[in-house]
Structure formats: C-alpha cells, structure tokens
Length: 331
Image (cartoon, rainbow, N blue to C red; front, side, top):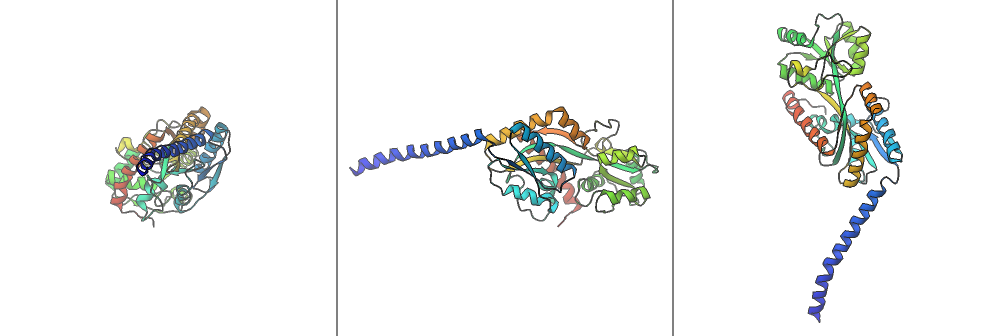
C-alpha cells in the first residue's frame, strides 16, 4: 500500500507542477494581452523644457494615442540623469514604468563615475533607440579659420595655443573634444563653462577659439552671422546642412553623439516589450514625428530591441578607450 501511494504521488507531483506552471504562463499571457490596462509612466531624467523633455512628451503623446491609454511624463532630474534612470531600474517589471535612456546614464556615465546604482546592461530591457544628437563645431565669424580641415592644420602647427569649450565636463561635446585631441594628436585646451550660453558669449568676445554647441542653436547663431559652422560631430551629415562636413570625414574615427531611447526594467514580460517596440517603430516612422525630431537637432535612427543593444555596446566600446586615456572622472 505504501509503495502504491509513493508511485501514485510520483506521478501526481510532476503533473501538479506542470499545471501550476501552465496557470502561471496563462496568467502572464492574459496580462500581456490586456496591456495596457492602466496609465503608463515615462520617466524623463531631466528637468522640464529641454530637448529631451520635448522628445519625451512627444513620445508620450503619440503612445497615448496609439495605445488608447494615458502615458504620463514624470520628470526626475538629478545626478546627470542617473536619478531617474535608477528609479526605473528599481520599478516593478510590469511594463508600466519606462525611462528615456541616454548615453550619460547608460554608456559614458558608467565609464566616468566611480560607482553606479545600477548595471546598465543587466538592469534594463533596452527596447528602442530613437536617434542621436550630434553637436556642431563652430568658430566666430571673424576667425581666419574657414573649415574644419583648416582648424586641424592650425592646431597642429600651433600646439598648445588653441582652446575650445563645450556644455561642460562629461558632456558629449567635451568627450568629443577629448576624442578629437587623441585621434588627431592635437594639443588644445578645454575651457570649462557651466553650459554653452556663457561659452558662446566668450566665443563671440574672442576669449575662446571654438565651441561644441547643439546643432539648432549653432544654426541659429550662424544665420544671425555670429558664428561659422565648421563641422558636425555625427556619423552622417545633417539633412538641413548637407554641405557641412562631419569631423569623421577629416579625421576618421571622430564621431561624438548623444543618443536617446526608451528602456524598461529588466524582466519586463517579452510580449509587452515587443508590443512597445512595434508601436515605437510605427510612431517614429511617421513623417510628422521625423520632422519634429529633425527640427530639434536629432538624427532619427529607429532601432529596435536587438539593434538597440548592439548600438549601446558599440557606443560604450567607442568611448571607453577615450575616457580611460584621458583619465576623466566626474565624481
């Protein structure tokens, strides 16, 4: 009798376990099919008003229309976008909390900081890269330098005499300057300012020789006759100024761009990730969205889950030797 009971139990237990697993997966499937059943939070780890916030609100608006559910922007600035990104890493992996990820939080940030509260690749499901933000490299209109090739030649023939500025230490422009110096073997000095506003004033006043600035701002200043555009820092020329070369064309390998995407906490159900990826692909492909992003200075990419992960790894690999060689730390 005891043998029979053991035999019976040995058969029942595996079946019971399978039934429990089946119920679990059916429950997940039903939850995914119902997604979204409540408002979604999109964390923007920057203060309201900037280009990142505008893009985040554009994505939230379009997703709300597409999903027939409110997508609410939650600005959580701080620590160079680490604060809001960390908030999302620690959120429930149920598909209802997303973050506007970016290079300073995911790729360059971990290389620049002594420690991070999250693991950039392990604690997130990186679902979509919207696009990249190149900078423009400018001089004042009175400068005798007419092109980026001339700038490089002038820097090489006058080592230690040229200076330049950016949005600040750790910014995409600052890091691109370090890349430019290393790849081009240029001896130049970075002059630190708290933002490109004060730096522009000194550029126009002749205190600094060149500046990495956002493309829209630089174009506005160029149209006003205040600065001369020498190059853009992206991998490709920008559509609004197709005659403006990239730095990469003069010095191969000099590519410096900020990027922005959408990520969810790791372990978010795959079906939800796939649904959001599909929606984002469709949204960013729309002509009105493309126009808006380009007007903001972005080069749209529309990279899905697989390509986003590869892009992020490549971005990390591009910056790691530059940052290590320059021994840059921001905390």
